[in-house]
Length: 318
Ligand code: UDP
View (tube, rainbow, N blue to C red):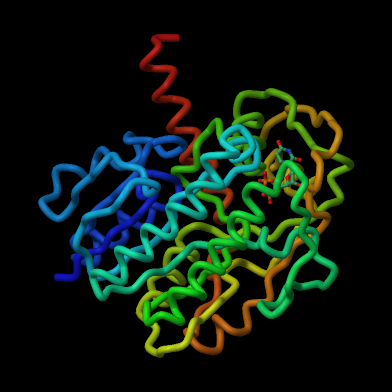
């Protein structure tokens, strides 16, 4: 039975990946410093003899044995990585290096979760993997963007030194186990709609993103990890359906049946104007395409947050 380490396993993506790996009969070690992840996300998995949770930071030396490691350990939401800017840089540099060292020591394989943010505010559309990006070093997003770029370079250097690595550039992913307070657009709009609070649109809402439902992302990560070959594969993983943020707000209002208003605020610094992945590589080599429509994914996400809010109301007795 393969022993699989998930760094950042108690976060949004990690919680979904842990569930799927356990379902597929793997042994899962979930490592998380719980800075933006939550124990609650994986608490129900802990009775399984094939699941182990370790509270630790990848910045500290990692003395674990494993066959494969998914590195998902990094704050990923703009308000969170800006609040934790120095920790974000450390996770992307010291942390990634520690994981690569541990991967090499174990003669294992690592899938590193990179991001569409390595393209910055892109000048080509849709973004292809060979695009080098339009990124600034001196912006509020740079701790994450530049951190993730350097993390890719670390993967490159370790690959040259014989380490088996693959790099997944994830585009906006959403679904159950998103943190209700993490500040990303899908969770913000959904919570606001469900509580009849104003939806906060940054800028005029004409900026675009392409949203991938988490089960599609998890499927891609699993296929990518098991892809044969000795090169250093770099794949965009995301859903190429591009939507304007203001249209996303309308969809969420419609799907929740909410009457919440939209409030317009100034656009945060360095907020990319558009984003859409070219996923030809992943499609051609792994026969992977996202299957879940935006409407269906949003409905499942709305369902998750509805239950979460109901639980919280019951707990506080309100
Ligand atoms: N956004 C918004 N309202 C919110 C949160 C985000 O209008 O409450 C916008 C944000 O400015 C960006 C897009 O939605 O243009 C996606 O933001 P998110 O933080 O989810 O991810 P990003 O792709 O920017 O990392």
